[in-house]
Amino acid sequence: MSHCRLGTCEGVSMVQSIRASLQAVAAVAAAAALSLASQARAAEDVFAGKQIEVIVGSAVGGGYDAYARFLARHMGRFLPGNPTLVVKNMPGAGGRIAANYLAARAARDGTSFGIFQNTLTLDQLAKTPNINFDMRQFSWVGNMNVQSTMCVLSQHAQLESTRTMLEKEFVVGGTNAGSSISIIPFILNSLVGTKFKIVLGYTSTSTILLAMERREMDGMCGWGWDSARVQALQLIESNAIRLALDIGNEPHPELKARGVPFVMDMLPDGDNKLALRLLLSPQDYGRPFGAPAGIPADRLSILRTAFRQTLEDGAFLADAEKAQLEIRYGSPEQIGRAIEAAFDAPIAVQEHAIDVLQKASR
Image (cartoon, rainbow, N blue to C red; front, side, top):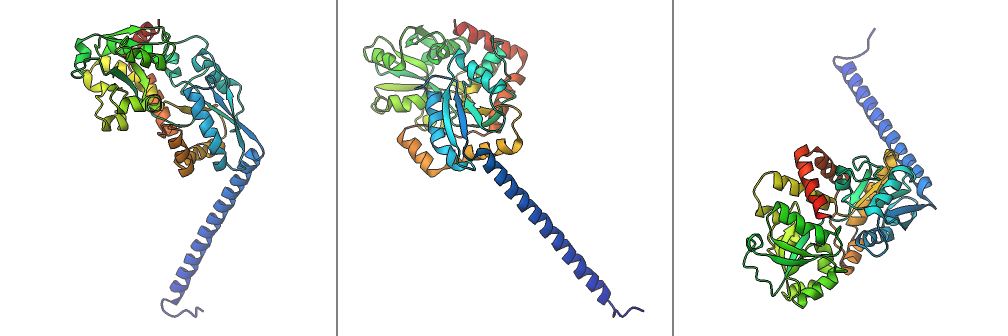
């Protein structure tokens, strides 16, 4: 015989059900906490006392090397086990040697990642020899800077407006045939309609600046803003050289604030604009860091988190400001989307862009 009064048994049953649900939730939370703790211990076991190699696809002293060494000084603080990050330079073949190493020979346990030239995407599209990797397959860790290149003109060059670059010849200096300051003005001539006369043979941007001062050159194009803001800020602030054109897929915030004209405003929609966007797309991931394909998801997540925490860290950013190193974080997803977009571009646009690039590199 039941001893429940009216509604009592239902109330007891409801309380018991709520208790059981709370206990189940608590059990799941405890299991999740144990799992996270176990993963953290496992990650610490992987990285503690280890060296993580940071591969650089260029020689000591260049821009890629500077970013890698700066990252390596700080990122260990944000990795479990506080491993040491050691920079290893693998210059040669425009970054292909380093990329081939990371794709085929580097460790796949999270102890090897690196930075190599963003232009390898264009090399792959152009079917450049000795590419034994696919840019779409790397495990991207993050990007340290979104780049913009520029055209700068000397104070003596008569530039009434942006349109003047479409109507008047300006003599610009270049180094070797494969450098950005030699290629970019050719691309602008081909796709935008500028009339730059390119004079090769200068050893560096510094020697071109001296030639501009001597009035041998009107200017140069394809100079990275992240380099110019360090190398020639005094010349810029004193108006000895003029920032004539911001060259990228999106206006650079600092250049926009200075009122620098934007290249995409100079040409109408169409195949030339699409080709230019494709050729400039590597600037969207100007300092990309990637790891081999196939490393465990938890280790890749740890590297990505540590990378982002480093770039958002106050001490890191203060040091970067002192070193005048421009930092503009880009996520792994942003790198991947930009690369996929290049490969997904219409074949006619790809062929047009690569044809212009190959002619510019001769």
